[in-house]
Length: 477
Figure (cartoon, rainbow, N blue to C red):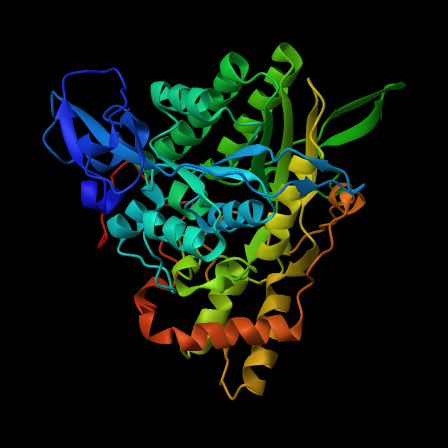
């Protein structure tokens, strides 16, 4: 278990519940400080140890931190310098979190990553792997330091364990928290009962803990929470940014936009949004909910600087997103897998715009007690339109790209109206990277470069919304 969490973390068992700090010479890590957390009772620990004999002792993970240094001042839009903000990126080892942490560090923010590294454990459990080889989080951070001179702190632990999170808040004292630290896959949440329970417990309890930590220790801290456009579903009216003004029986009010989640994952995000809105009203927390569309791409300016900074690239049917999956399928000669009729329309954005949007939200924080909702996407596409774009780009590269319709494993409309508003981030200065032929070409070339790492058995969908059951699925069931 220790080696799965981190190549340089030690796993020991103690009868003590209380987190403590160990000096450098007493721990096995190669970094300057140590944060210790008890993960024995947290959701991800229970999920992955259920088949092992229960232990009476508690798991204590020695987690490392890298001390930060002073960086150059960040410039405001008016050109006036101000002291760099301290930003905590929860889930900073993941697909969006890693790119965001590097981007913010490069922009002059002081950054700390908080992560339990469970996303890597999901791969091990399900027999999956990133298309790209990804280095350990410790090696990534050390590489960033050697290339840029900028330091990123690292806290390894589970935010569902409040003692760990509270110690982390008191130690780092963040001005802003970017919260990516949730199980992010709809198919994963629909594998079986245990993954559904884990998804909701991990996501909802983790976010609640973050809200309580802000209230208790950093009341002026700005929460930037990654939501999803999937909260809205596919209504037959325009999708507004978080709120809708309606007139009913002669009376008018502005209310939260109705939510129609389509998986246990999406439902967890809806619960998060309600909890955050309530705490903004009750406690005066300032929060921005970024309802993000489907992200594609792999490279940002920062992750392209060195191979050890390379981001993960998921192509499987559990964690892979549509455009990324199609590019890998084309690269290995597998037909593009369009679910059902393929008329499903979704909002999309380049990962370079993900990091840009988060930076804009931090630089323009919500007011105390304000719960803002931004729809974070740049374009809308039907699934069939994406398949056509990849087919044309593949043909230019000499690839024989075919498309097949596979039975839709999800419960969703396959043809529907879809029109979302997304003006708030543009008003703050978002400069979108629209999907272009050149970008698809680069993704295809990237996929061809690493095609020997593709496990084609992971391409076809194997999780059914209608067949999810109580029996825990293994890799072969």
